[in-house]
Image (tube, rainbow, N blue to C red; front, side):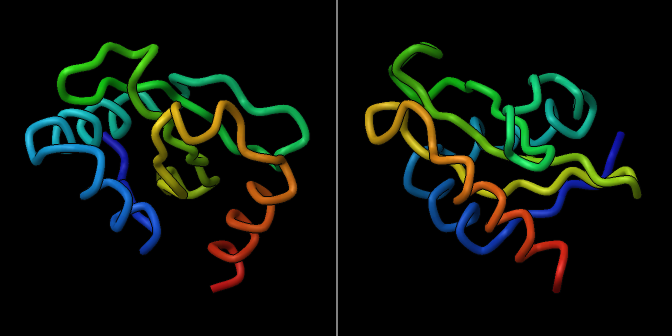
Length: 103
């Protein structure tokens, strides 16, 4: 099991889209399966995984953007409802990742 770190923006949005049980289930899953999602092209190594939202399946659920560090940590960058965005622009993903790496 890998260490999972959340950005402030992830924590804020996760509270808006998940109940505590769904949040806990996701964090447990990603901690044991950090390579679960494919790398988003041109994102600097960010990955996008689809997850359910209470009362909806994966297709109406949320998307989580994260990356897996060389130190075996999973960094959760952002979570958002699919209805808001299908894909976030890669320059935004790179910026989020760079901000975390430069802290």
